[in-house]
Image (tube, rainbow, N blue to C red; front, side):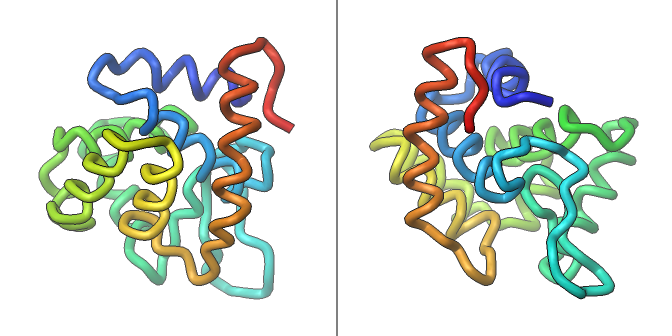
Length: 157
């Protein structure tokens, strides 16, 4: 799935704030090394690597939550399913997901999205993804590429 396809998929949800869409995409850019491939597997020698657009980590519980989401939504693994899970959590449409990440964490991300894409990017990383090494400067820098991709027909690179 390209960055444009991800953007178009997220834009279909009228309740998603533009700052939140940019934040999701900036985080995806970093988590996938700008490939936007939903099958991206974490590099390294772990026997249980993180996986997908959001690098869903079995050690942090998001991977297991995603498996539950596939059952809940009667979906197969896909970029759309990974995106839909996060959207359903952030829009409070899947109670189990909201409970797992925490109502307060969802509220922090939504409040940050009201301020700016930068704040939303930070909040989504810090309160939902919680990576071991956030590389926040890279995530914030990715916003420029995301905004460019949104305003043109080019992929983020």
